Image (cartoon, rainbow, N blue to C red):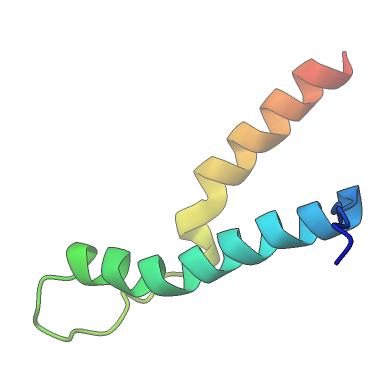
Length: 68
């Protein structure tokens, strides 16, 4: 029986890495949410766009510095 060597190309290796990262994320994300939870099964806090205004202004400011 002749020994043949098979090699994986870059697309196959990339698919393996991406697949393992996605697979790991599927199983670790619920655990991360459980650690952040207080155990009271409360819903998410309602937020409005005004809660993000300061962050949006900061992003615009940093973007203007980058373009200058």
